[in-house]
Amino acid sequence: MKSAKVAKVDGKFDLDLNEIAADKSISHRSAMFSLLSDKPSKVRNFLRAEDTLASLEIAKLLGAKVEDNQREITIIPPKVLSEPFEILDCGNAGTGIRLYCGLLSGVDGSFILTGDKYLRSRPMARVVKPLKEIGAKIDGREQGNKAPLHIRGAKLKAFKYSSPIDSAQVKSALILAALNGDDKSYYKESLLSRDHTERMLSGMGATVKEVELNGENWIEIEPLKEPLKPLDIRVPADPSSGFFFAVAAAITNDSKVVIKDVTLNPTRVEAYKILQKMGANVEFLEKENIYEPIGDIVVSSGELKAVEVSSNIAWLIDELPALSIAMAVANGVSVVKNAKELRVKESDRISSVINSLKLCGVECKESEDGYEIIGGTLKSATIDSHGDHRVAMSFAVAGLLCGMEIEDIECIDTSFPNFFEILSRIVGVEFEDRTS
Ligand code: S3P
Image 1 (cartoon, rainbow, N blue to C red):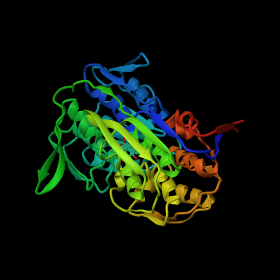
Image 2 (image 1 turned 180 degrees about the vertical axis):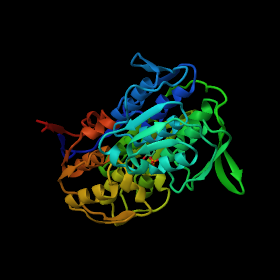
Image 3 (image 1 turned 90 degrees about the vertical axis):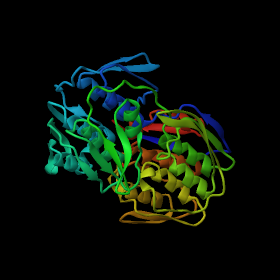
């Protein structure tokens, strides 16, 4: 097991960050959606982290060929997806397993999807249940709620599904299944979750569009009549990864970061808006629009005050751990509500964040669907990541104020392998490997 000791920051910093990890959601989708074309897709700045490389490996096991000249990967899809000889291992990635589940449900063949011990503990019924209702043949532990999952590709029926949870993974799995349906399908969620699937598939020529039915917004999906156009994309930087450094600048006196070439998709930048509401200075500078609006986000420190977060939770789900660090040093009592989904992420993020903050001397309490944090001062502590990359990186950033030891940091490689390289530009970091 590896651990990192982050020193207390000495003074201020002002950094342009060109090297924030590429977007994880868009990278997963690039690997998968390239299989829906009959021509090679070109992807620049693909995220070379464990989660997304697992999705690319699965594309290969399904018959794709991948050429990589380091600057760009070319994914050459097979004519027909082939039944793989191997088990398809999604690693730690909920996005990987749930989207592949939808994509493969309607493909002729037998497929086994699995992942690491954390992924195998996470709920899959949210995709398996609606997929089975339209004819998918999926089984797994706990009647298909836990991986390993076995899929036997089947003929899928069209559906009209109003999802009980706002989840881009569930939505994307159902949209991918609908492309193999026998008629037009309709999907609805109460808050628009991240919409990379809709944007990318429409860009590739699929009919995935918003329609109004009886005064409600639904997504209409038409089954594919022919292969889609290939992707030609440069993956922007990941705003969820950039957010750790946004918080770093927000909590350190007189400091500033510019997060370069990041997606400014409105479903992805809500946490920056909350940070702004708390008193940090935040500016969004849009530069281009390729599938998504892309530009720079400038964040500098400010006097932070407490905030209540109870809406748009699906837009904050990956950033709440880091936002909690800002809450811990803000003036007043911050409250997070309606965030039960945090309990089924890479760890139970409500208890991993709250128990770790308590170790840092912060007064806080958890409830079933959220928590309360009384802003104050952070103390140095030894924090267990609980195998959750976002918990590990959030407390590493907290270390800037007081020094911190983070244990079990390997999980950071699932999304942001160069995180400590960037953090080392701000502060000293020492590593220890206690594996043997
Ligand atoms: C993701 C969706 C979110 C997010 C995850 C990536 C995606 O999960 O937490 O990191 O790429 O679709 P849910 O959709 O399950 O909330």
